[in-house]
Image (cartoon, rainbow, N blue to C red):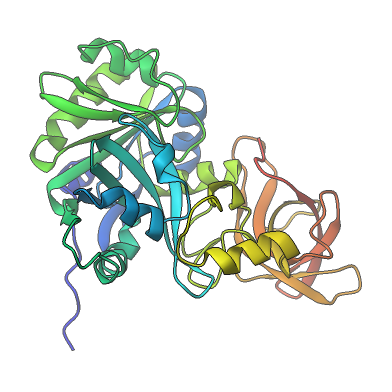
Length: 365
């Protein structure tokens, strides 16, 4: 059986030139770090970091039936969007779990863009195609291979991007986007979104413009402490905020209700799994996704058992790491609802040693 060739982003040669540590991720050869995860993490929290996240998928959804289609296929209320607005959402899988979590961009009348996880790209595309209306009122287009995505994240992001831009970005609210000319590259979609909790922008450009945009941002960012950043600190940054990672904290077996995502689940419309999820919201779930902070020195890892005070298993760790910003050891995991209470003491089974942790509600910073 032939193996699938590993893919690269338009900036692959740049990462190699910068001596990035490269790892396979979601079928791509991606940078995990350049100067080190800790340095990159702290740069994003205090100054700014630049990420190549061009491995993400972009699907265009157009046509007179686009709104009804997206209302049916996603959990959040798409009709609440207007051109220039972004929405975090998920696609229930018809079995109570999640096909994927995603961003929905309202580009214009009857026009939307879905930004999906790289590891789910083919699965998401097939799911969408299976649910297209028969009247051909919706047209799907996969732009993933022709579009690049850079994330400029951190408190100095505006200081770096604004001098390169032909329009004022200071009033661009969180989860809104605009089009602007940046570094003479023509129209760039500038989105006030990101996966770090540090503020900043995500920039969508044609793949052939990725290098010019990267170079312009790195040059402009040098006086502001901008560092190129890899997937390593992207993960530690998102965990500090309690943002879910597909494949860890959410997947085909987890519902948005037990994952604490009822806020992106609108029951004022009809959508896949509505009745099941409404029942969960009304009656409660058997488990809940919780954050925890270690009270003893031990690093929690995905898959480790969570136990009660008497040693009985009550859940599993889904994500865990050191909080680089605080020095604390933190994690998330599903816990039986009877124990899923803020302040509850639990035990994390770390290599057959039961170490105390305290349940909290993220974010951790």
